[in-house]
Length: 638
Image (cartoon, rainbow, N blue to C red):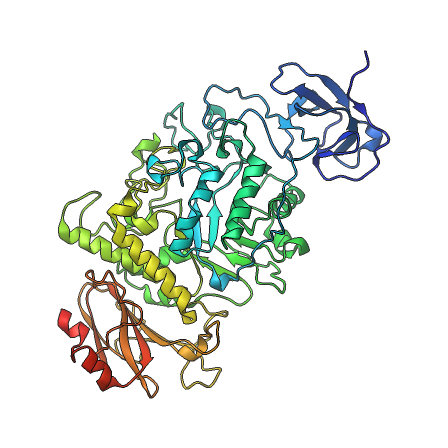
């Protein structure tokens, strides 16, 4: 009996790598340097092949095997057999066998791709990437499963830990003020860590048999959304991911996904994978993790308006559009050192505050998934990774953290108050720096991993976002929300170009200038822990026209009070207090439009380990004093 699948010699079109629908069936292309290649077709879930079809040698081009196959591919899965060995299609768009997250009973057999004879039509309704400029972005880093997996998320049980669960949190994200989600790898990776593929244990510690690869930073099927991250019984990861992108765009939110490459992939494959997500899923950007051909990606004309984030872009051609961004740990480590009062940090802090080159953008963060959360940064001196089963030998020892006087959980009121203030300081450092800020999900309400700084294998409450903390730590959330709104209102803190430290508009003062405890006298001595930064409002262009306020930000990271001399303002402007991280009663920020007048317009006394923001506002000084009863808010506190 003649097989219902056969090589279709009538199909002469050109197709990319992978499996694509044709008039009579499907076209298969597979790159592998073997001597022979066979297409192996299976009925969905079947154990024995339906048919094996050798690729015609005359249709081989280089190391790419190609053939069109006629037949009915509904409910069909496939593998390739190269020189007798079964291989998974790295360009497959959907796979079977991993629909259930963390299934320890599934076999280690090659992963079968699903033949999609007629990909389900999806109406994008004119959807396009949003292309929000970096200077307007507020990034927010999440894990597709951990973001809503916890019962406290309020998401319907069947949708917890899925792409659809993320969609349910869109109102929260909009209210917080973020513009751009950064999603840990959403591709079809193997989360079950098998003994033969565990390579994170250089110390010979016995691995746990049931450990999972929660993060996903491992080679995977780079063109397929992860089935276990889709909801419902009939898994449709492709459609659900597209619905997520479309829903985010409708709400004015971007989506940047992370793709991990270990350096063994061909540059052509990496390029095609990045193009694929931009073309097929309308993502707004890719954060490249691991080892990728950055120069090739940066120069690709198809990607010239796609946000591309990487640890560095040395030698890359950024083109005319500002789409490349440096996203590394430098800001985090330097600013954490400044935060806890380390010696010799003023130079690096001043650089981090202004760093934002014209050709390549900068994305800053104070915490990332690899390391302490913000809450743990102020609660632990050392890592506590015992739950990982590696004798607490995994994870970095360089956390730049300080527990504020007690390790871990404590009831000491002074320690807890200092931790709160340090969190306010950290958030303000992040949102008042020129580079685009990235907030680790949960840091806005005190998420803790109990001191675990390497939770790559913790698919549990160590990693899952505990939304119950939103109520318990409502003050932290309120401060983070206020800091985001403050940044977005005032363009001097997110200029389109890096401050030149010069008066190139002839406004009478530089765009940004540095000061010590004496105005106009910066002191970068290694023993100093005080820095003043003056922002000229003329350089902050408001969306509706006009310019921003003048601002002076005073950083006192010393453990004793310090007095700062305030720079003089142009005529008609007087200093008002906009924020003070030492003011727990006001939770750091003063009410917008009701910022109290400083009675002493020449000096500002700063409390230990605190940041204050004063703004120049027009008005008659005496009239404003009368409204406030003639009192200086700083004097009242002292």
